[in-house]
Image (tube, rainbow, N blue to C red):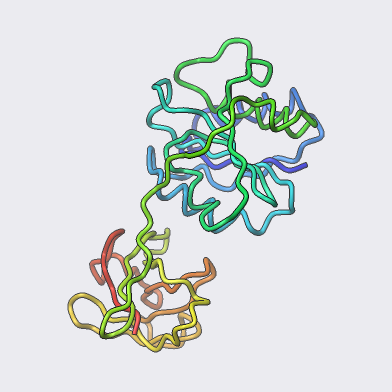
Length: 253
């Protein structure tokens, strides 16, 4: 059984280690995989993107924990969502929503059963005291239905689908990666034949197969490994050089 971790904890402190200790104390045979602990503090959208674009590559039955939780200790629920292929556990703040977007037959539970939690639950560290033990007990064979009451809705992080316009499809940047590539919400497998991307300032960027297809410092669009059309600068930073950020609107032509 595999449990993945996505957090904004970083690696300087011992928070991630504490979560792993709890998991291994309950389920010592589990394999723990770090998806990312470099999410900026409280950045729910960046964590949602990381989970959405990474979870499909894991074996069926994997349990994914996401802890980017600025509302920890508040009235927000702790939830678990089971799909056909995986289980997602985290706060009900939208961080899980993109990973299950478009999937059918979701089973959702509020994580409340004290048998799945540590004896003492801190109001500031649910990753260790609530999400980690719940995932570990599930990995050990506990019934998903015993986590707590069934839910019929959960918080969904906003997602603006591309809209058909005269020049093509209007979409927006949903993620900027560590290289400065601006990733749009337009799926690479969309039936529209992409030829270029039109920026708000009128610049038109050609669609190429790889970054080095244009000269160093030149801008282009590619169908990125995340499964979406992205805007890049060969050996440069598209976000900085083209003035792009999350929410920037572009047209896929």
